[in-house]
Length: 52
Image (cartoon, rainbow, N blue to C red):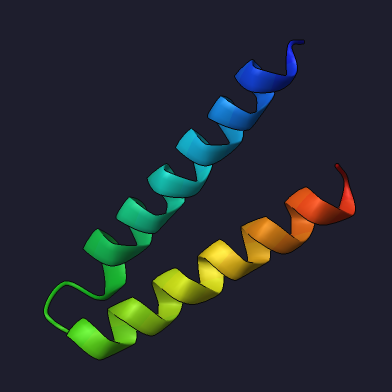
């Protein structure tokens, strides 16, 4: 699999998880939503750099 396609799929998966978590749990809570989104991005970044 080409590296660009793999990174694109990784970013799309991260965005999908963020949207699902936002809609399911944090609809009207701005700060909690922001903290969870940053946490999700940090976890995805950690896995990306670990398995790069």
